[in-house]
Length: 255
Ligand SMILES: NC(=O)c1ccc[n+]([C@@H]2O[C@H](COP(=O)([O-])OP(=O)(O)OC[C@H]3O[C@@H](n4cnc5c(N)ncnc54)[C@H](O)[C@@H]3O)[C@@H](O)[C@H]2O)c1
Image (cartoon, rainbow, N blue to C red; front, side, top):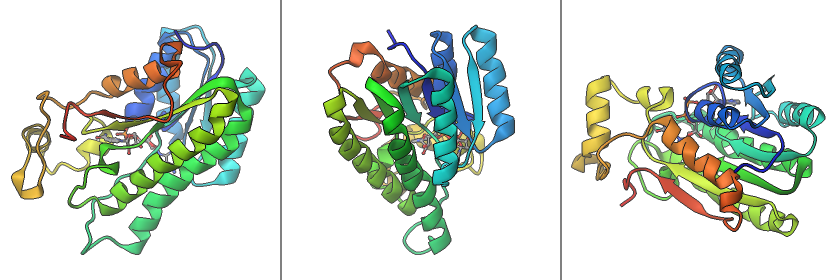
Protein backbone atom coordinates (compact mmCIF):
# COMPACT_ATOMS: atom_id res chain seq x y z
CA UNK A 1 0.00 0.00 0.00
CA UNK A 2 1.24 3.48 -0.88
CA UNK A 3 1.69 6.13 1.75
CA UNK A 4 -0.97 8.80 1.15
CA UNK A 5 0.27 11.97 -0.55
CA UNK A 6 1.52 13.31 -3.86
CA UNK A 7 4.32 11.60 -5.77
CA UNK A 8 6.62 13.35 -8.26
CA UNK A 9 8.02 11.31 -11.15
CA UNK A 10 10.71 12.70 -13.47
CA UNK A 11 11.21 11.28 -16.95
CA UNK A 12 7.48 10.59 -17.01
CA UNK A 13 7.04 11.28 -20.73
CA UNK A 14 8.51 7.94 -21.80
CA UNK A 15 9.63 4.45 -20.92
CA UNK A 16 10.20 3.58 -17.27
CA UNK A 17 9.10 6.95 -15.85
CA UNK A 18 5.87 6.71 -17.83
CA UNK A 19 5.23 3.17 -16.55
CA UNK A 20 5.85 4.31 -12.95
CA UNK A 21 3.44 7.22 -13.41
CA UNK A 22 0.71 4.97 -14.83
CA UNK A 23 1.13 2.37 -12.10
CA UNK A 24 0.94 5.05 -9.39
CA UNK A 25 -2.12 6.60 -11.00
CA UNK A 26 -3.79 3.17 -11.20
CA UNK A 27 -3.19 2.85 -7.44
CA UNK A 28 -4.96 6.17 -6.93
CA UNK A 29 -1.89 8.22 -6.01
CA UNK A 30 -1.92 11.94 -6.87
CA UNK A 31 1.00 12.25 -9.30
CA UNK A 32 3.06 15.15 -10.65
CA UNK A 33 4.76 14.26 -13.91
CA UNK A 34 8.00 16.04 -14.82
CA UNK A 35 9.84 15.90 -18.15
CA UNK A 36 11.37 18.22 -20.72
CA UNK A 37 9.19 16.61 -23.42
CA UNK A 38 5.85 18.45 -23.20
CA UNK A 39 4.15 16.32 -25.87
CA UNK A 40 5.12 13.05 -24.22
CA UNK A 41 4.05 14.37 -20.83
CA UNK A 42 0.58 15.20 -22.13
CA UNK A 43 0.26 11.70 -23.57
CA UNK A 44 1.24 10.10 -20.25
CA UNK A 45 -1.15 12.37 -18.36
CA UNK A 46 -4.02 11.48 -20.70
CA UNK A 47 -3.33 7.77 -20.21
CA UNK A 48 -3.09 8.23 -16.43
CA UNK A 49 -6.35 10.14 -16.30
CA UNK A 50 -8.10 7.30 -18.15
CA UNK A 51 -7.17 4.93 -15.30
CA UNK A 52 -7.88 7.13 -12.28
CA UNK A 53 -9.94 9.99 -11.02
CA UNK A 54 -6.91 11.25 -9.09
CA UNK A 55 -5.38 14.56 -10.14
CA UNK A 56 -2.49 14.44 -12.63
CA UNK A 57 -0.22 17.44 -12.76
CA UNK A 58 2.19 17.90 -15.68
CA UNK A 59 5.27 20.06 -15.22
CA UNK A 60 7.61 20.73 -18.12
CA UNK A 61 11.13 21.09 -16.77
CA UNK A 62 14.69 20.25 -17.70
CA UNK A 63 16.34 18.49 -14.76
CA UNK A 64 19.71 20.02 -15.66
CA UNK A 65 18.27 23.37 -14.53
CA UNK A 66 18.21 23.80 -10.78
CA UNK A 67 15.71 26.64 -11.16
CA UNK A 68 13.32 24.62 -13.32
CA UNK A 69 13.46 21.69 -10.91
CA UNK A 70 12.83 23.99 -7.94
CA UNK A 71 9.84 25.55 -9.70
CA UNK A 72 8.36 22.19 -10.75
CA UNK A 73 8.70 20.60 -7.32
CA UNK A 74 7.40 23.77 -5.68
CA UNK A 75 4.29 23.62 -7.86
CA UNK A 76 3.74 19.97 -6.94
CA UNK A 77 4.08 20.86 -3.25
CA UNK A 78 1.63 23.76 -3.63
CA UNK A 79 -0.89 21.40 -5.25
CA UNK A 80 -0.50 18.29 -3.09
CA UNK A 81 1.11 19.50 0.14
CA UNK A 82 4.16 17.73 1.61
CA UNK A 83 5.15 15.04 -0.85
CA UNK A 84 4.94 11.31 -0.08
CA UNK A 85 7.28 10.22 -2.86
CA UNK A 86 9.86 11.24 -5.41
CA UNK A 87 11.01 9.07 -8.30
CA UNK A 88 13.84 10.21 -10.58
CA UNK A 89 13.77 8.39 -13.92
CA UNK A 90 14.84 11.15 -16.37
CA UNK A 91 18.03 10.07 -18.07
CA UNK A 92 20.06 9.97 -21.28
CA UNK A 93 22.33 7.39 -22.90
CA UNK A 94 24.72 8.11 -25.76
CA UNK A 95 27.04 5.33 -26.94
CA UNK A 96 30.75 6.02 -26.55
CA UNK A 97 33.84 4.34 -25.14
CA UNK A 98 37.27 5.42 -23.98
CA UNK A 99 38.53 6.09 -27.50
CA UNK A 100 35.61 8.08 -28.78
CA UNK A 101 33.55 9.62 -25.98
CA UNK A 102 33.46 13.37 -26.53
CA UNK A 103 33.78 15.85 -23.73
CA UNK A 104 30.35 17.22 -24.66
CA UNK A 105 28.76 13.77 -24.35
CA UNK A 106 30.52 13.15 -21.01
CA UNK A 107 29.19 16.49 -19.74
CA UNK A 108 25.63 15.73 -20.95
CA UNK A 109 25.55 12.40 -19.09
CA UNK A 110 26.72 13.99 -15.86
CA UNK A 111 24.41 16.99 -16.27
CA UNK A 112 21.24 14.92 -16.76
CA UNK A 113 21.90 11.58 -15.05
CA UNK A 114 23.83 12.82 -12.04
CA UNK A 115 23.44 16.57 -11.48
CA UNK A 116 19.79 16.33 -12.53
CA UNK A 117 19.21 13.83 -9.73
CA UNK A 118 21.12 16.03 -7.30
CA UNK A 119 18.80 18.93 -8.19
CA UNK A 120 15.74 16.75 -7.54
CA UNK A 121 17.03 15.46 -4.20
CA UNK A 122 18.26 18.86 -2.98
CA UNK A 123 15.13 20.72 -4.00
CA UNK A 124 12.83 17.82 -3.16
CA UNK A 125 14.09 16.98 0.34
CA UNK A 126 12.56 20.02 2.10
CA UNK A 127 9.24 19.37 0.34
CA UNK A 128 8.98 15.70 1.36
CA UNK A 129 7.02 14.81 4.41
CA UNK A 130 8.69 12.83 7.17
CA UNK A 131 8.37 9.13 6.35
CA UNK A 132 8.32 9.76 2.57
CA UNK A 133 10.11 7.54 0.04
CA UNK A 134 12.56 8.34 -2.74
CA UNK A 135 13.50 6.00 -5.58
CA UNK A 136 16.34 6.87 -7.93
CA UNK A 137 16.40 4.97 -11.22
CA UNK A 138 20.05 4.31 -11.98
CA UNK A 139 21.32 1.37 -14.09
CA UNK A 140 23.05 -1.98 -13.68
CA UNK A 141 25.83 -0.27 -15.68
CA UNK A 142 26.60 1.60 -12.45
CA UNK A 143 28.18 -1.58 -11.12
CA UNK A 144 28.81 -3.78 -14.19
CA UNK A 145 31.40 -2.49 -16.70
CA UNK A 146 30.08 -2.23 -20.27
CA UNK A 147 31.96 -1.48 -23.47
CA UNK A 148 30.81 1.61 -25.38
CA UNK A 149 28.94 3.10 -22.40
CA UNK A 150 31.72 4.80 -20.50
CA UNK A 151 30.14 8.15 -19.69
CA UNK A 152 26.73 6.62 -19.05
CA UNK A 153 28.11 4.03 -16.61
CA UNK A 154 30.24 6.61 -14.80
CA UNK A 155 27.30 8.99 -14.46
CA UNK A 156 25.08 6.20 -13.09
CA UNK A 157 27.75 5.01 -10.61
CA UNK A 158 27.94 8.55 -9.27
CA UNK A 159 24.15 8.75 -9.14
CA UNK A 160 23.80 5.52 -7.15
CA UNK A 161 26.39 6.78 -4.67
CA UNK A 162 24.83 10.22 -4.34
CA UNK A 163 21.40 8.70 -3.75
CA UNK A 164 22.67 6.47 -0.94
CA UNK A 165 24.58 9.34 0.71
CA UNK A 166 21.52 11.59 0.50
CA UNK A 167 19.39 8.75 1.85
CA UNK A 168 21.68 8.40 4.85
CA UNK A 169 21.17 12.09 5.63
CA UNK A 170 17.40 11.79 5.21
CA UNK A 171 16.99 8.64 7.32
CA UNK A 172 16.67 10.71 10.50
CA UNK A 173 13.37 12.04 9.16
CA UNK A 174 12.20 8.50 8.42
CA UNK A 175 12.61 9.17 4.68
CA UNK A 176 13.69 6.06 2.77
CA UNK A 177 15.87 6.42 -0.31
CA UNK A 178 16.58 3.45 -2.57
CA UNK A 179 18.19 2.92 -5.95
CA UNK A 180 16.74 0.73 -8.68
CA UNK A 181 19.28 -0.47 -11.22
CA UNK A 182 17.53 -1.85 -14.31
CA UNK A 183 19.13 -3.87 -17.05
CA UNK A 184 18.05 -3.81 -20.69
CA UNK A 185 14.47 -2.60 -20.70
CA UNK A 186 12.31 -2.25 -23.79
CA UNK A 187 12.00 1.55 -24.06
CA UNK A 188 12.90 4.18 -26.66
CA UNK A 189 16.29 4.62 -24.92
CA UNK A 190 17.11 0.92 -25.35
CA UNK A 191 15.78 0.69 -28.90
CA UNK A 192 17.89 3.68 -29.96
CA UNK A 193 20.96 1.49 -29.28
CA UNK A 194 19.86 -1.21 -31.72
CA UNK A 195 20.83 -0.95 -35.40
CA UNK A 196 18.10 -3.54 -36.06
CA UNK A 197 15.28 -4.21 -33.56
CA UNK A 198 15.38 -8.02 -33.88
CA UNK A 199 19.17 -8.25 -33.71
CA UNK A 200 19.39 -5.76 -30.81
CA UNK A 201 16.87 -7.61 -28.69
CA UNK A 202 18.51 -10.95 -29.50
CA UNK A 203 21.98 -9.75 -28.48
CA UNK A 204 20.66 -8.23 -25.24
CA UNK A 205 18.96 -11.50 -24.27
CA UNK A 206 21.50 -14.04 -25.57
CA UNK A 207 24.62 -12.08 -24.66
CA UNK A 208 27.71 -11.26 -26.67
CA UNK A 209 31.09 -12.69 -25.57
CA UNK A 210 32.89 -10.14 -27.77
CA UNK A 211 31.60 -7.33 -25.58
CA UNK A 212 31.69 -9.40 -22.35
CA UNK A 213 27.90 -9.45 -21.97
CA UNK A 214 26.50 -12.59 -20.37
CA UNK A 215 22.97 -11.98 -21.60
CA UNK A 216 19.82 -12.16 -19.50
CA UNK A 217 19.41 -15.43 -17.58
CA UNK A 218 15.63 -15.00 -17.32
CA UNK A 219 15.59 -15.00 -21.12
CA UNK A 220 13.78 -11.78 -21.92
CA UNK A 221 14.15 -8.02 -21.90
CA UNK A 222 12.45 -6.19 -19.07
CA UNK A 223 9.25 -4.37 -19.87
CA UNK A 224 9.05 -0.88 -18.34
CA UNK A 225 6.28 -2.25 -16.10
CA UNK A 226 8.72 -4.74 -14.54
CA UNK A 227 10.86 -1.87 -13.33
CA UNK A 228 7.82 0.21 -12.34
CA UNK A 229 6.58 -2.64 -10.12
CA UNK A 230 9.83 -2.60 -8.15
CA UNK A 231 9.83 1.19 -7.91
CA UNK A 232 6.27 1.14 -6.55
CA UNK A 233 7.15 -1.61 -4.06
CA UNK A 234 9.99 0.56 -2.74
CA UNK A 235 7.64 3.55 -2.51
CA UNK A 236 5.10 1.51 -0.58
CA UNK A 237 4.70 0.75 3.11
CA UNK A 238 5.59 -2.87 2.29
CA UNK A 239 9.19 -1.60 2.03
CA UNK A 240 8.95 0.43 5.23
CA UNK A 241 12.24 -0.93 6.64
CA UNK A 242 14.18 -0.86 3.35
CA UNK A 243 16.49 2.05 2.68
CA UNK A 244 19.91 2.81 1.13
CA UNK A 245 19.67 -0.25 -1.13
CA UNK A 246 20.78 -0.68 -4.72
CA UNK A 247 18.46 -3.22 -6.31
CA UNK A 248 19.13 -4.77 -9.71
CA UNK A 249 16.04 -5.34 -11.84
CA UNK A 250 17.75 -7.01 -14.78
CA UNK A 251 16.70 -10.66 -15.03
CA UNK A 252 20.11 -11.69 -13.69
CA UNK A 253 22.21 -9.82 -16.30
CA UNK A 254 24.54 -8.46 -13.64
CA UNK A 255 25.71 -12.05 -12.95
N1 LIG B 1 15.88 1.28 -20.98
C1 LIG B 1 16.91 0.66 -20.41
O1 LIG B 1 17.40 -0.38 -20.91
C2 LIG B 1 17.48 1.19 -19.12
C3 LIG B 1 18.39 0.38 -18.43
C4 LIG B 1 18.93 0.84 -17.25
C5 LIG B 1 18.59 2.07 -16.76
N2 LIG B 1 17.71 2.86 -17.45
C6 LIG B 1 17.40 4.17 -16.88
O2 LIG B 1 16.02 4.29 -16.71
C7 LIG B 1 15.64 5.68 -16.80
C8 LIG B 1 14.51 5.80 -17.80
O3 LIG B 1 15.01 5.40 -19.07
P1 LIG B 1 14.07 4.91 -20.24
O4 LIG B 1 14.65 3.68 -20.77
O5 LIG B 1 12.66 4.96 -19.81
O6 LIG B 1 14.39 6.04 -21.31
P2 LIG B 1 13.44 6.96 -22.23
O7 LIG B 1 14.37 7.62 -23.16
O8 LIG B 1 12.31 6.16 -22.74
O9 LIG B 1 12.86 8.03 -21.17
C9 LIG B 1 13.72 8.97 -20.58
C10 LIG B 1 12.90 10.22 -20.30
O10 LIG B 1 13.78 11.18 -19.66
C11 LIG B 1 13.48 12.45 -20.21
N3 LIG B 1 14.62 13.34 -20.07
C12 LIG B 1 15.85 13.19 -20.64
N4 LIG B 1 16.61 14.24 -20.33
C13 LIG B 1 15.86 15.06 -19.55
C14 LIG B 1 16.09 16.30 -18.92
N5 LIG B 1 17.28 16.93 -19.05
N6 LIG B 1 15.11 16.87 -18.20
C15 LIG B 1 13.91 16.25 -18.08
N7 LIG B 1 13.62 15.08 -18.67
C16 LIG B 1 14.60 14.49 -19.40
C17 LIG B 1 13.17 12.17 -21.67
O11 LIG B 1 12.45 13.25 -22.26
C18 LIG B 1 12.36 10.89 -21.57
O12 LIG B 1 10.98 11.16 -21.42
C19 LIG B 1 16.90 6.43 -17.22
O13 LIG B 1 17.49 7.04 -16.09
C20 LIG B 1 17.79 5.33 -17.76
O14 LIG B 1 19.16 5.65 -17.66
C21 LIG B 1 17.14 2.44 -18.61
